[in-house]
Amino acid sequence: METTYINSSHLRVGKVIADDIFANTKYPIVYKNTKVTNEVLHVLKAFHILKVPVLVEEEEKQTDQKDNMADTAVIGMEVPKPFMTFEKIYLDAVEQFKKVFFGWESGSKIDITKVRGIILPLIDRIQEERAILFKLNSLSNTKDYLFHHCIATGLISAIITQKLGYERGFVLQMAVAGMLADCGMAKVPNHIREKKGTLTEQEFLLIRQHPLFSFKMIESLPAIREEMKLAIYQHHERLDGSGYVEGLKIGKISTFSQIIAVADTFHAMTSERVYRSMESPFKVIEMIKESEFGKFDIKVVQALVDLVASLPIGTTVELSNEDIGEIMFINSFSPTRPLVKLANSGEIIDLSKQRNLYISQVITDK
Image (cartoon, rainbow, N blue to C red; front, side):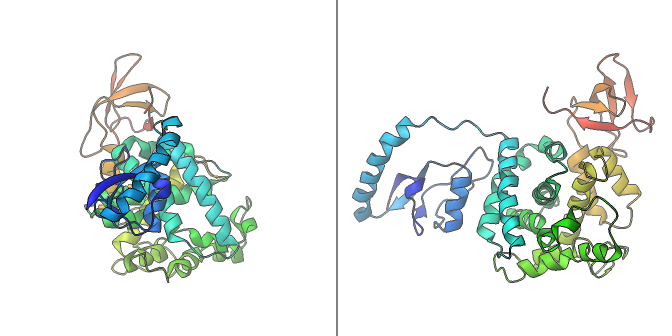
């Protein structure tokens, strides 16, 4: 068989991809010899892939060549798409997620292909650009917090899973599981979800049932591994038994559940909420390690610490007193509190000793 390039809009289910397809990613978004499915078509569309290499039988060649000749005039007139920023892809994903979430409110079933298409374009970007982790809280807003939270929890779950050494298949599955962990909130009345005052006991108990609602929504989906379904159901359980739905303790809570739990807590605490202002990722890490000690799996928390705190020497940061500086040295015993050289005075501050200060944000755009 020979290889030819055809316009992605003419790509049909059943065709075979001839070469790995990349899209500003370290790993292919579609691998060589993959048979085209509706999910593959959705991924190609999400990444704006215009031309696709496919294997063709001899009898197909003439037909495909005619299609390509017709496409050439159109493609030649198109302005190449600029490199899309993470912010643009992320905000588009949030808008897409809002639409499917409203569908779930109305009783629609989960379309796993559509869900994967929302999260997949973001995964490679956050794996390659770790600084994106520090942008997620600033991209969120109180009005659409739930939708941002679902996307961000999926992304943070994915990179924690990768940091723990799991293979790519598990990373992708955890991204989807993290994003769907709160899908059951669609079954909680909107006026309760967005209530600004104190919840009644009955409303509070209903909110705490959302992991069960989420599990019921994804229980019959064959594309999600059983481990991930359990993780969705257990993502609010805590090792000391203080969580819900069942109040399970260590030994009965899976590692994947803990990954989503840590990702969920980290994003929630670093984001602006109706009833609480956002906190620094570095401060939140310390809070999770100290005040929440005993609730989370230590190795999962450490993976998040490594992702957040192990910044390159020279990284520009802002401190809680609004001073700007750059990281000079990371103390392995206190990675969230490095030595920082202040830009205005040249003074070197050891944050492990000056506990009244902390890193408020990483400055990624200078």
